[in-house]
Length: 473
Image (cartoon, rainbow, N blue to C red):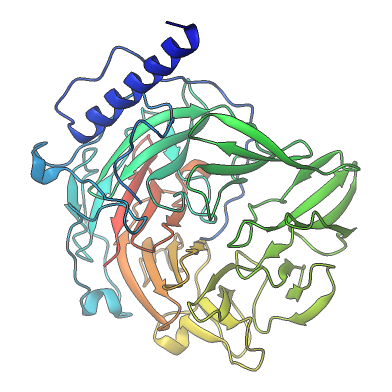
């Protein structure tokens, strides 16, 4: 038998063992160990304010050494989940039921109650809001295993895998996990990638196996299924390419991108169209971030020092987005194609923690979904938000860290909030219990593409920061 055939069979046996261990957690793991290759990454404290088949067969050549499996229940058949792949979403078996109450939908103060840090994989109920939370990871003391950014989503497009970042211990790297909606995750491997910043790694919004990142001046597509990399574009004439101080995701079809081109102290902003290969570069001036492609691909949002503009691919201003401030914005799109940009507004006629402005209808008035007009307080500081890319349910998840000026707990303080843009409603789901004492203990929150699941980071008042899942009704 050839060496190539030996290697192929060995890989398939490892894959099969990994799948068996994931779905039958009482079985012991194999003798092999995961690769823990360290990535050369640039540390950053910039965090933006957030917006398939559950069976993995041998034909998907993901490295799948079974380690650190978190399970729920007793391991019986009733506790296992398996998707048939018919709708591209993970199976719903084991997903806890939770109905919203007046407490979730209201704007009255809800005090944070004492709650012990739950064991990995155990369902617990938030005592204030009634939602179901499960802890996904088991970081050691001094470690953090967290979603690195609120936008883009930590999930791949079919919600079968989750991208997290481990730091503070012996291993510092992005980590790929299998995700099961019943509350199990399994570490697949540490990724040997070197993005411009740890936050600037983007799941494809079309292909569940592809991650994108910039390495130097190269836009790279990394295939997690076969551990291969492809350079899609080299931006010649730049010494370094990045997105700025925060990640800037691509359009919903993976076609349009926004970057910065750095040459010494000179900074240019760029738009890139993959289909045509067209690149447009202009001096950044007062533009503070890379141009943010809107989901439809029909334009870009640019954040200036005092406003947010909608521009075309040639970076020509189409119009200014009214009443929106250049801080942590997220874009979402409805099934009918109407697109919104959502962000905080602190001054003006409409103020709020989450104000939605239509990009499709310039005459539409902005709506404060969470703000004084809807019964909530003036927007507090320390908000993390990001939108989901699902077209039929445009949603956001929001985490708030601020307290009242007198140090007393107020409405939204320390809360995870899910926002439905289509209906202009908000649901307060949980208290995140993050101390926010360091960059990696901030409650970075990320919503899955379908809007079903939200993960958030929290140190739970302790010395390790983990990733927690809260289910959205």
